[in-house]
Length: 178
Image (tube, rainbow, N blue to C red; front, side, top):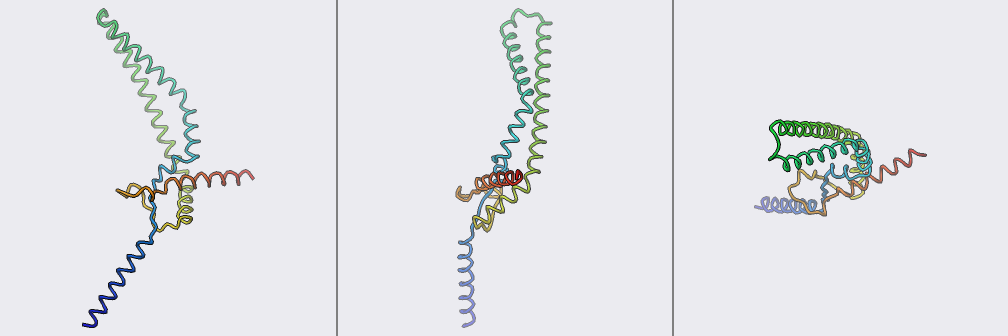
């Protein structure tokens, strides 16, 4: 009977101590993609992409305007148009749509490639930033935002990681210049 009592006391102590340890565990939640794409480095890449694809964007806008003008012309004149004119207009509209779709596909593919290149190039910087934030904040556990169905906003360290990425890139570029 004395052994059972002692075992109960030891188990109670173990459960109590585990509860105390669990209460001291510091947890953070991170959206790594958001941290990367909100960084200054991502903004630079975004500006480069905007410059690179500005002609495609202008052409897409022109094609969209031409399509709208063609639709308006069709709506205004459809009652007096011959079958040949209707066919020609439909053909012109299809050609414009194909051109627009080709531009959109080319830009989309290029954006995906650039984003993938950016993610790969920033992998080490992200790891360093997360490591720094963990060390500075005393975190015991960092969860990926996708693995946490719910978390209190106070646990989100994404902005801290973005700030650390920015800080590390500024100190890295200033030390490279020396």
